[in-house]
Length: 207
Image 1 (cartoon, rainbow, N blue to C red):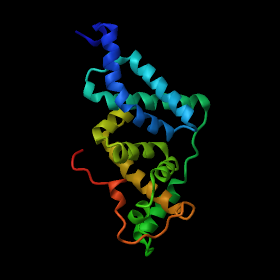
Image 2 (cartoon, rainbow, N blue to C red):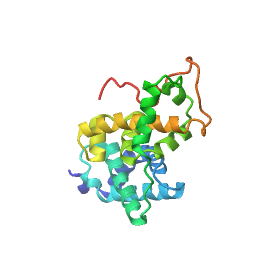
Image 3 (tube, rainbow, N blue to C red):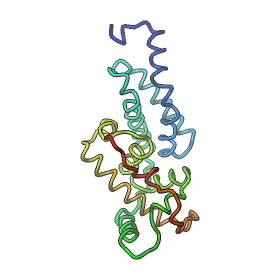
Image 4 (cartoon, rainbow, N blue to C red):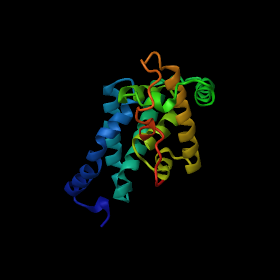
């Protein structure tokens, strides 16, 4: 029996079981890409509506999470186009130069030590300061724990592009943190601080 052939009560129950566990993460993802909590909530609500309308398209329950993220990204893109509010992109060259100076120069500021001081609010702010394509790749992989092939599905891009965006996104994020370290009250830390790789750019055994 196909999903659409199920009684409506069973469809509702199945939909809620698959969608509700992901709402908090979807909302956090949307909040980083909208100007207010209300806008983020509206985007998630629209996502749920669209997900329900095309629920029959979800063939594999194990793919519910990337399927929902893909719908949410489409909703956020539509909102951005309709409101014509495009986030000002930072100077990519400047940020990459800041990163190169950090790891290649004789500065005693080590990114992993500086980033270890970031709380979740600072990290969210740093992600808003780099181009959306790179921020999305880094957030989905390093924060939300998606694998490369899942991000490729969500973003609709090849796996090679996913890997490239994650790599470059980490460099841009590093440059952003360094460029704003004084304003955010960061600075050099001692070598005993935990590494930030557990939070950003951590090694993953299975992709």
